[in-house]
Each structure stands twice: as C-alpha cells, then as structure tokens.
Length: 353
Image (tube, rainbow, N blue to C red; front, top):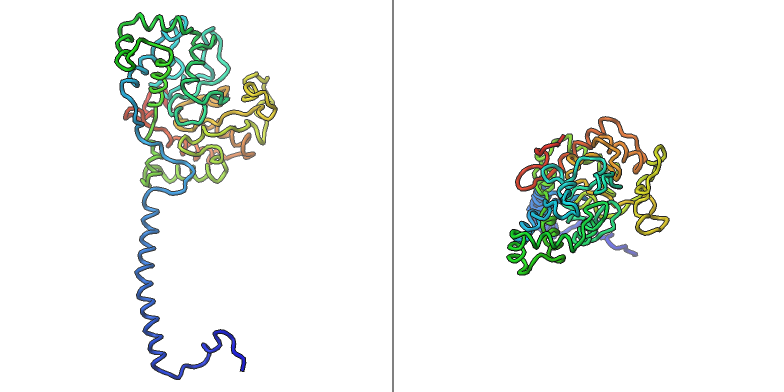
C-alpha cells in the first residue's frame, strides 16, 4: 500500500503511552513559548517607548568638542568690522546671532550699497551641511570665508590690508600668540573663524527631544504636521540631521516659479557655477533647522512667511495645493525644529514670530 509523508498522522494512535508522551511534549513546548512571547512583547513595547527608530530626521548632537581659545578668537573676528575693506561690515552684519543667524532681509546689502544676489542663509548649523551657499559652490568653511572676505561686493578686503590691521592691535597680537604661537596670519585667521562657526550648533529643539523618545515634547497637531511632511514627500529632500542641506534639487519641478517675474541671473542657480544645462534652476536644498526664525525664504527672499513658503513648495516641488489646515499643521511641525544657542531657544530671541 502506498503511503504519503505524514499519512500515518491520520491513523488513530492505539498506544496510550505514545499519546501521553506527545501531550507532555506539547505542554513543555507551550511552557517554553509563553515566556519567549512575553519577552518579545516587552522588547517591542520598550522599543517604541524609547527613542524613535528609522526616522528620516536625526537629532543634532550636543556640543562639538572644540578648542575654546580658538572659538573665542574666532568670535572676536566674526564680530569685527575691520575684517572688511572699509571697516563697515562684519560677518555678524549679515549673520546676526542674536536672532536666527541671518539678517531677516530678502537680500543683504553689499559693500557697494546694492542688494546682493542671494538671500543670506543662517550660519547656525552650517557646519553640518555637505556644502555651503545656495549654489553649493564651497565645500569647506575656510574656503567660503576667504571668498567672502575678498569679494568686492561682500567684505571687499585684501590680505595685506586686513592682516596689517590685526597685527597693529595688541589684543589680537596676544590672542594669536596664545592660540597659534604666531602673529595674525591668513591660515590662522581662517582656522579661527571656521572653528567658531563650527561651534554654532543649535541642539535640543523640541523635535530633537521627540526623536530621543520624549513623546510629549511636541503636540498631537505638530506630530500630525510631521506625518504630512513625510506623507506628501517633503522629507525626500529635507531629511538627516540638518533636515536638508545635503543634496541639490531643481526649483520648480511641477510649476515654474519664475514664470511671472523677470528672471535674474541668480535664478539660474548652480548653472552659474558649472555652466551645465542640467544645473539650470538647481540649488542646494536649504536646511530647515530654525526655519521659523529665518524669514524671508528662498534664494531671493520672495516668501515673507513660513506659510507662504510651504504653499509655494507644495505647488512647485510636489504638485500639490494644500489646504490652510494642512499648511498650518506643517508649519507647526517646522516650528518644533527651532533649537537652542548657549542654552537659550532661538524662538525667544528678538525678531522671532
């Protein structure tokens, strides 16, 4: 008689001792399984009551380890108007640390008294991005700082004139001697400035606390705004520790944002750097850290409010028309990205909404 695998299982077991042994084995298996399931349940519960996992946004690390003397010297330089050719502009003129790290204007005024081409990006957390400026034309803070110092429309300085001024100042002579063991020099000045800028990190935003597991750090409405931010695709470009700042993207995927305005050369974006056709209207995606305190928005400062910026991005980049309620929810989430500088929230500073 042919038998198939397992067919003997259908036959009644005539031996009671066999049935008894099977019953004992089954009970033992269940007894072993119950604590395993309980442990797995506890691990699942603990996982979701602790820090969030696999989120596209990550918290800002607290406090980079930097040479405090270099930071102090860099801060002096950052606020000193003598770094400009005519002693009128400092780095802090366009990057106001008492507010959001920018100047709250559509475009800053240049050394020639005319508006510059681009909106001033915040200097806070700039060290966390993979490249700098709207066009991403600098990779290192030192490189970008030197270009700003020497640009005729920006600081309009020369190394000979700038170093002569610093070497004539006893405070700078002493500071450079302590930190670098030399008189003020180009390399050391750029190093000090960049070190100070690397200290301009704003951790401990409410959303950072939420990512670390504090569920009540943001409200249910703000959490809903975050879900919309993810569900609608905003997070495709705005993710990571900087919530952006780590890739390039064309401005105007579903809608031409320049169609109703005369186009400025600056609107061409990276094309003015690379000359490649595919880089027309391409910009470095800006970080959304502290975005609620850095109005106005976009490379030309066209959006005066956060809500206007959200509506514009939805139309141009996502092909969506959002309701006022959706815009409000996303804006609420973005406001949870405002961090702290020197123990004080940027939202408490002058000029904050």
